[in-house]
Length: 305
Image (tube, rainbow, N blue to C red):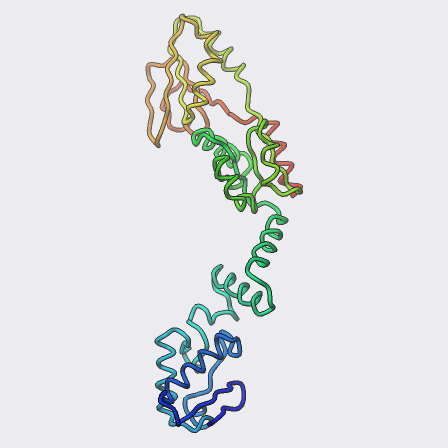
């Protein structure tokens, strides 16, 4: 029985049916999995380990080659073999987010923490961090797209969106997010948002200006509404009805994909923020869904974060 002294403690026996090469390889694996050899640790040279273990250096070389093939060791250019794959051994110089996460998990385990404890603490810390984007919680995809675009264009912040069901099902969506949703639904978001960063209610613009524009039309006219939102078209239809009456014709255009829309026969066109750039017409008007006061309130909340 021979014991390698120093950093590596390996016990080999020639009086065994297991080859010395396999004994050496598997004992190195054991040292790695038990944390006695850390990721990135350099191994002795072939000849040095051969001298210490009193086995032929070719045996050590074969064991090393086997471990390299199996991904336990990596040969760095200009240096000895090290523990781990090329990606995993970069712990001294983390090159990406996966490396950072792997290093954190390993260190937490080394310190005796469970993965559940790590997950809970990381979530708590992430929820405490200032937001880096806006999250629009809205059921209808079209309306969600309009709100996201208006928030991004006016506030300069990234704006993502999800449905209320997705938001309730995946609490992690609130991490790093300032949640915004319809004003009457703010209370329902409380269980899913940090106490120090409650959801902000969105206030929609009134359509009095648009209704007055229709009332001022002197001749029977074609009034078009262009939107990516079915609910926006439905609401506009009801709001405009007293002004449209039977005197004018209401033309509703639901846009489902990027396109150039020609409405040359329309006398008055109302577009939402998403469709405004798609419509080719001289008489188009931009209806902004979110009020200026609401945008200012969201901006102030972001500045205080």
